[in-house]
Amino acid sequence: MAIFGLFGGKAVTQDAAIEAAALRSDRFRQERERDWQRLEAIVAKMERGRYRKLSDDDVLALPVLYRTVASSLSVARETSLDAATLAYLEGLVQRAWFQVYGPRTTLWAWLRRFFGGGWSAAVRAIAPELLAALALMVIGTVVGWLLCAQDPDWYYSLVPGGFQDTRVPGASREVLSATLFGNAGQDGLSVFAASLFSHNAGIAILCFALGFAFGVPPLLLLVQNTATLGAMLWLFHGQGLIVDFAAWLSIHGTTELLAILLAGGAGLHVGRSMAFPGERAIMQAAAEAGQRAAVVMAGVVLMLVIAGMLEGLGRQLIDHTPGRFMVGGSMLALWLVYFFAFRRVPQGSEAQ
Image 1 (cartoon, helix red, strand yellow):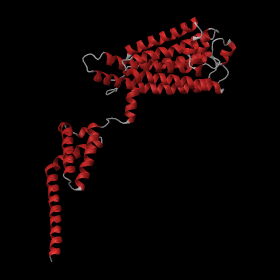
Image 2 (cartoon, rainbow, N blue to C red; image 1 turned 180 degrees about the vertical axis):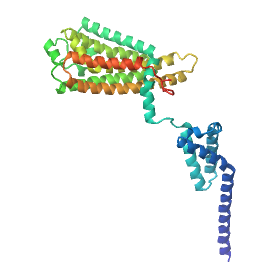
Image 3 (cartoon, rainbow, N blue to C red; image 1 turned 60 degrees about the vertical axis):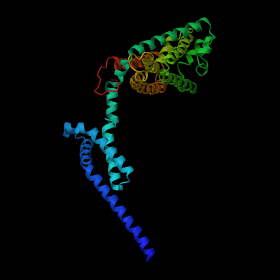
Image 4 (cartoon, rainbow, N blue to C red; image 1 turned 90 degrees about the vertical axis):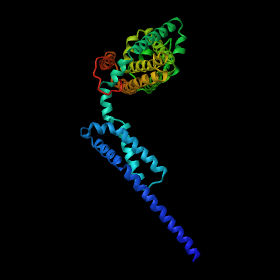
C-alpha cells in the first residue's frame, strides 16, 4: 500500500504539472493572441500582393507587431510552452521577417532595374575616377612603348611569358603577320587568346578588390597592365603591323579594356572615399562607395564574359582588318551609348 501511494502521488504530481503548463500556455496565448492574429492578417495580405488593401495603421503597426511576436516567441521558448504554440510563432515570425527585412524584389525585377539604368547610373557616378583611370591607362601604354623603344630587353620584362611565343623583338613581318591572320583554328592562337583573357580578367578583379588600400594598388595595376599593351604595340609597329594588330585586338579588346577601366575606376572610387571621407566615418564612406562600385563590378563580370565570347567567336569568323574594326568599334559604341547616353534611372536603383 505504501508503494502504491508513492507512485500514485508521483502520478498526481505529474498530472498537476501538465495541467499547470496547459493553463499557462492558454493564458499566454489569450493575452497575446490578438496581436498574433493581426500580424498574421497583415502578412497574409502582403504575401498575396494585396498591398493596397493595407491601411496606414497596418503599415505603421507591422514592425511593432513583428517585434512583439518575436518577443513572444523568445518567451515561449524559455518557458517551454506547448509545441503547437512554438511552431505557430516560429512560422509567423519567419513570414513576418521576410516581409519586414527580406528582399523587396524578385531576381527578374532586379535585373530589369540593373539593365534599365541602374548599371549605367553607377558608372556615371564614378566618372571622376574613370577619367583618372583612363589617364593612367594612357600613361601606362606610352611608358611601355617608350621603354621598349629605348631598350628592347624591356619587352621581356613587360610582356608575360605566355604572351611571347613568336611575338618577340627581332621577329620578321611574316612571323608577326602569321599570328594575326589565317590561323584562327590553330591551338596556339587559342592558348594565347585564353591567356590574354585570363590575364585581363585577373587584372580587372584585382583593381577592384585592392581598392580598399586607399586606391594605390589599382593605380599600379592599371599602369602595369597597359605597359604590356604599349610594349606589344611597339613590337607590331616596328614591322608596320600596328593597324592590323589594333584591329585584331579590338574584337574583344574594346570590351575587355573598357571592363578593366571600369574595374579600376570602381577600385579608385572605394579608395578615394576612404582616403577622403569628408564628414563621414571612414567605414561609412567605404560602405557607401562599395555599394556603388559593386553594381559597376557586376556589370564588369558580364563584360568579361562577353569579351571572352567575342574573343573565341571573332577569331574564327573574322580574319580581316576592316571586319575586326567594325566589330570592335560597334561594341565600343554600344557600351558608350549605354553608359553615357542612357539616362533612365529606375526608382530604387542600386546606383542611388
